Amino acid sequence: MTRTGPQGRTQPPQTDPIRALLASPPDLPVVEVLPELRDRLSPSASASDDAGAGACLVLSAPPGTGKTTLVPPL
Image 1 (cartoon, rainbow, N blue to C red):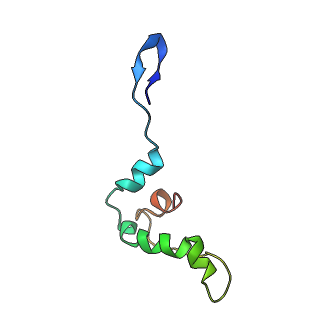
Image 2 (image 1 turned 90 degrees about the vertical axis):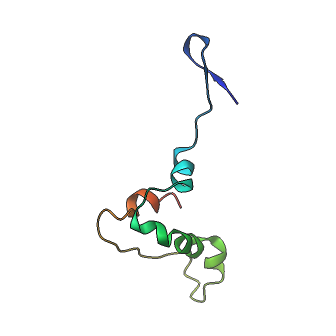
C-alpha cells in the first residue's frame, strides 16, 4: 500500500517500529532469553500453569541489558 503525502508525493508504507525492533533486535544481553519469556508469558503457558496464577514473572538484570527496550513489546 502506498500513501500520498504533501504535494501529491507518494510515500512507502510505514513499518511497525515494534515489529521491526523484535524482528531484528539490537545486540543486548536480554535477547537470549526472549524466546523463553515469550513462552512463559503466552496464554497457553498460563493455562497449563499448576498454580493457576496466570502469566507472571520477574525479570531481574543489570541496567543496559535491554529489559525496558525489548521485553514490554512481548
